[in-house]
Length: 341
Image (cartoon, rainbow, N blue to C red; front, side, top):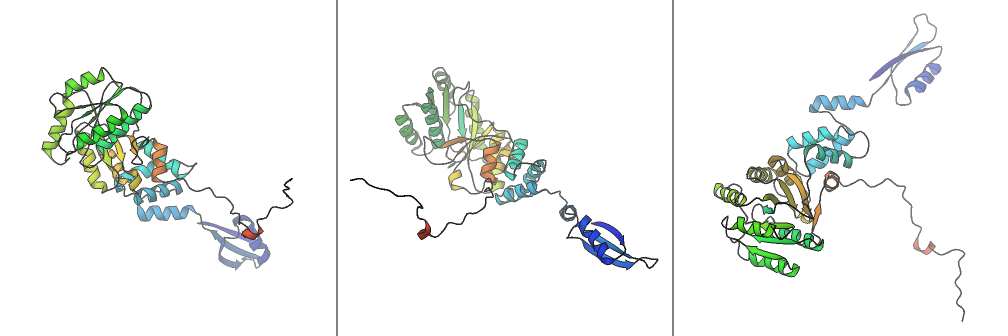
């Protein structure tokens, strides 16, 4: 709070001085006559907006800025773990110009890495791993379709011989795309098939069975698969769900060798805190997201800005609203159409 005293011959003159310097929001704290009996003395106060920040900081133990608070609200809405929220808000508070969306993008760039899968050629095949029901098989088909539509030679391997119909489902997609599909059982023979396919194709994708991240047997099976060939494991995880569970899943697959996270079912999910928690706990890079069920157009690479727009959509521009006239008034003026016969 800012305090200041004013001396003037009359009360009206003193009030004028207060308004000129402190504005209309000034508060009169005290009035008194001068000690010599000539004139008046007014003490006025003006509240500093930063006082509210000081009070908030004292009550909550945290700093605040408009952008930081908007990012905090969005992250909390998405169910992001509190520890991760605090880290990202601190990064967002460093942004003083732009918008809350750009502040969120800055926080994402500060805390996560973004590495979309290559669309042209890779020296290593990509193995899609994850829990049952996360969408690995359809994602494998989407990746193959993207490569095929881009004119790249692509091959697909399935190691999922556990789930009933898994091979047939993938074969239906690869048949339409005219993509070579090979089937292997477990780690045995995977290395030979991978070496053969990598000699023929620019990109090779491997579909793996759904595995329980909390089962040591399943995680040992996954490590054997990964070690059987020089592959890069990509965690496929459905968005939504409990953030704490997702963090445990991300950590388990990260420890097993996964390097990136590909999030699915964003078209059916409103809250993304789970995939943020999984990437954070597993130290995973974000690659793509699946935004719709269509095989040909179902994947989209993400970066800090596009991810921020998913978390905190850009604010609508503030434009003056133009009231439309009643429909009966919408008549052309001064325009006549003549039809010559």
